[in-house]
Length: 495
Ligand code: ZN
Image 1 (cartoon, rainbow, N blue to C red):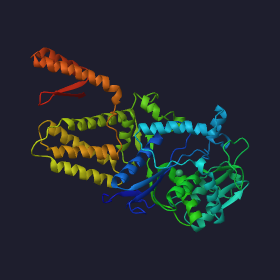
Image 2: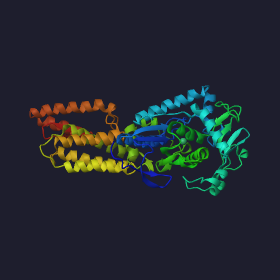
Image 3: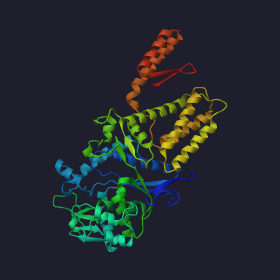
Image 4: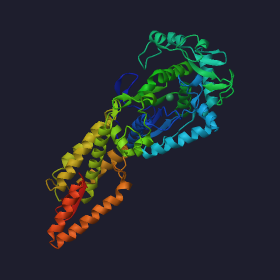
């Protein structure tokens, strides 16, 4: 195992802390997964990619990682949903489908999009609907501890009572007095003793399809409960890392903390990590704003705000070009820049294959510094933009050797290859085969350009300079830069 110098930002303590796992050599992480309704969109991509990089890096460091990412398939009531009806149940009623059929359909699409983004599947992907019994038992513990009450068949968490004994709001930094004035009128508010109280169990209305029996009513669990229940079931009463988008800090994660402290007397999470949000052309994403772009729309370019299709690797690279705690603003210009940047990086990496090793090296110290700097950047709270800038330094070393301005030994070339395979592919999860514009689509074009250049090489061999120059100039005029190499061969790329 590599010595662990990983420092991560703990949202709870609002500072960077050295990562020390609960159990030697093991790391447990829980990340709030998607609410399975609607097609995977950009907002899903960021936490998935952020925590995929953490999962990959912890694994690279030698930890045995258990990564749990839940699927919210019940009980997530949106405030603006029609009469508080569960969205999945509503869709099922409208399309005459089984609720679980709807869940599966969206889940399959989500998984397909994640696969294209090269996001590794988690170790366990538990469904909220598959853990109703555990959630009911959890509610009983909170009631026994005195922090929840039943009201008209529903069960609510008693926030003021909890706040009197513990500190409600410690993660988000809110206080209960502010909450009092901020809390809007919610469905079923008249059942609550306090507007800030939140549902642990909701009694189902007669038309509600997804429902389960409980000691209080036929109903369904509140959204916050599934994460407290399933993280405990699979990671224990205490575990290392809990992640999610910043928008989940309040109320979701705040409620999770309150539930676990109420049920167990202790907090469960040692490191809270939150990724920042995504904006599109400087605006928040939202259905009403018309900028709610699904991942498939990005991959096909079929949304009206998009000038072109962007490959999954362009999206992933673009997200990694920002630190996970910074906002990311999507625009066509920014995505095109990311596409070009990744293409340039891949060209450098591919050029490694044609480098001629020398007996001596003028770049060995530089290569060592790049590798060291990549580790330091990853250890510094997963600073992927800095890793990317160091990988571009590696590209510049490759170019200098290729141009004959520097020399590299076979060991240097192997080490450069290892730097790319470790940091670009294994840890940042980029894929080499899918270049920015889509490697498979480009294959015939690449072959055609190679063919033209073969013909040019033959013309040159016969000293037919006119044909040779014609081919080079005509390729240049349609955007291909052709370069003759020292060994009499050629290289080309898109300008
Ligand atoms: Zn959650």
